[in-house]
Each structure stands twice: as C-alpha cells, then as structure tokens.
Amino acid sequence: MCSHTTFVKFWDDNLEKNQALPRTVGFWGTALIPVNGMIGSGIFALPAIMVASVGNFAPWMMLCGALLILPLTLVFAILSTRFDRHGGPVLYASAAFGRFFGFQAGWARYASGVVAVAANTQVMIAYLSVLFPVLEDPTLKAGAVIAFIVFSTLISLVGMRASVGTLGFMTVVKITPLILLVIVGLATRDPAVGLSLPQFSGLESVVLLTFYAYMAFENTTFAAGELRNPKRNVPLALITTLAAVTLLYMLVIWAYLAIAPQVVGNESALAAAAGNVMGHAGVIAISLAAAFSISANTLSGGIVIPRMTYAMAEQGTLPDMFSHVSKRFQTPDVSILFYGAAAILFSLWAGFAALAVASTLSRLVMYLLSSLALPVLDHRNSAKAPWWHLLIAAIATISTLWVASQASTAAYQMLGLISVVGTGLYFIAAKGTANKPD
Image: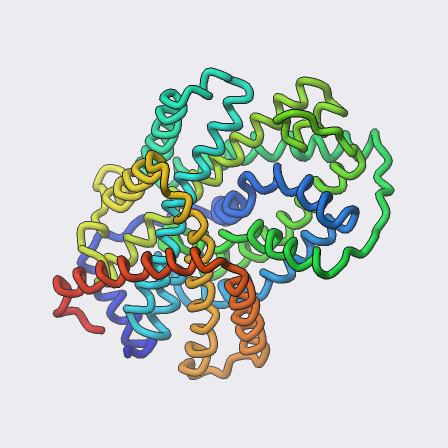
C-alpha cells in the first residue's frame, strides 16, 4: 500500500504524460454542480409523499435528512482541501488504501451514475409527455430519450465552461417556478400549518427518503482538476449548497401544506398546488420546471462523472484511452463519449430496473470508503488533525452503514455483480500498467 506522499508524487508525475485540463470554473459554477445533483425529480414528488407520511412535520423531516447527511458532507469538504485534481473519492480511497480501493470507489459511483442518467431521462420525458402527449408513443419516447442523452453528451464534450453555462441556464429555469410557488402559496394561503410529531415507525422509513434526496452533493469533487482554487471553493460549495437546498425543500413543502391541493388523476401534487394558486399557467410552469430539473440533474452528472474515468485512467486503473484529452475542446473526450454511449444502452434495456435499485447502494460504497479514508489520511499527516475529524468520520461511517442496512437482498446481489465486473476490469487494466508504482 502506498503512502499519501508516494501517491501524490505518482499523480503529479503522471500528469506530465497527459495534457492537463484547464481550470475554467469559479465558485458559482462549482456550486451549480452539487445543487443540480441534489435537486432533480425528488423536489417535485417529495412534498406529497412526506406530507402523506408525517403530516405537518414534513418540512422538519427534510432538515433531519440534511443533518443525517451533514457528516458525510463535512468528510468530503475536509478531504477536498487536500486534493486539487480530478477524481474526488477515487483520490481519497487511493491515497488511504491503495489503487484497488480507489478503483472500487470510482467504479461504484460510475455504475450508479450511468444507471441514474438512463432512468432519470425516461422520467424527464414522462413529464414532458403531459404537455406533449405525442411523446407517450414508445418509439418516440425512446427517440426523445436518446436525443437528450446525445445532446447532454455533446454539451459536455465542447468544454467545461459551456457545460456549466448551460447548467446555469437550466438551473434558473427550474428554480424560478418553485420560488414563485413558495411566494404565491405562502402569501395567499394560511401558512400556519402547525406541528405534530410523527410515530417513530413512520419516521424511520421517511428519514431514508430524505437522505436519498441529498445524495449527489459530492459530484463537484469529481471535477476538481478544472475548478479554480478547488481547495477553497469545493468545501465552501459543499456546505453552502447543502444549506440552501435544505431551505428550498422546506419552503416548498411549507407552501404545499398551506395550499393543500386536491390531486386528481395523473396530475403531480406540486403541479396541482401550482394550479390552485396560479391556474393552468402554474401547472405548465411546474411541469416544465420538473422536466428542466431532471435534465439539469442529468447534465450535471454527465459533466462530472466522466471526469472519474479520466482520473482512474491517469491513475492507471483504467486503460489510457480514458485519459485522452480533445485538443480542440480541452475535455476528456473518450470518457465523455463512453459515458454517453453506456447511458443510451441502459436507457434502451427494459431490464435495468434491478440495476437502478442497486445504484444507490453502489454510491454508499463510495461514501463508506471516503469516510474511512479521512482518519487514515489524518494519521499519516505530519500536522495533528482536529479531534472532531475522527468524530465526523465515525458518524458518517455509522450513518452510511445504517442506510445500507435498509437495502434489499436483491440490491446486494446486484451490487456484488457490479463489484465482480469492476474487479475484472481493474485487473485487465492492471496488466497494461504493471510498470506503474502501486
């Protein structure tokens, strides 16, 4: 197992053999990535689910979920102050435990991301089909899914600055109707919704749901090599965006409680709430916001997740072709194109539902390895780490294990299959990089 110093030296030496990607993204672009990782389709479905489960305690339930994931956020924030290259958890686990575990952290997150983009794109087209019924045709729906994945892949390919600019536009489009709904709803309806504590048996299952709502906060760490001043901006973005997204979730649920819409047919609950206070225009605005929200979530993953395979190739745990950089666009073109192609294939495979179930569990593997890496790297550091680092890492590890314990047997079986495939790829790649230091 290599030391932290040896690992960083190997990483820097390897960069000399590959074209470094330019740092073009400042703090606000850095913050857009975790915001769009956490705000996807969940914010449009959660208000009704939460209110049905825990009543007027629902907004505070979102705060409980944020507090549950806060230790993990702090772990990533601390670790991100030590690395300024691509990879995020790939770097953290590699530096602490060696390249094999770094690969497993990256592979688990990559598998999760590919499945998520395929599933989320189908959900996005389903939202659009409410406004454009022609998309309900299976052939046209499949074509629309493929077209959007191709579009997001091309946006990611032409440059980080263009990708983040597009992401910023989509973020404004999806957030504006939600803020308008909050303002109009709380201003025109009685916001005094009360507070009743739920039964713990109902609380436990909903806590898991709120935890899932905040997952993907870590996405911005994957692309640290193209961010300006990442050791400062990444941890700042992680903490501030978690707070901002939590507040938005709570305000949207408060507005939903104040409006108390009657949902009929296939109408989404949040669209029904918008219809109650803003008429048909509100329904259209929320439906479009949902489509843009999911598409921005998908684009955000398409921007940063290929940077993981780029980092893994530089580290020597994937074939060198994944570290290829486009001379014209200054992007990891092979990694981006491979990711887009894999997402298209999964979107066409009707049997990928089991993988979707395991995708969250795969992400927990990355969380666990990162949480365990923090005390290991602190121990190796010549400067004494603050005492609370160990406490934060312990809480993050325990919360991750608790969430993982709620998964089904089928999810663990699929996770095992994903791990076996990844391990095979690792040793295949290792044959071509046997001369590189461990």
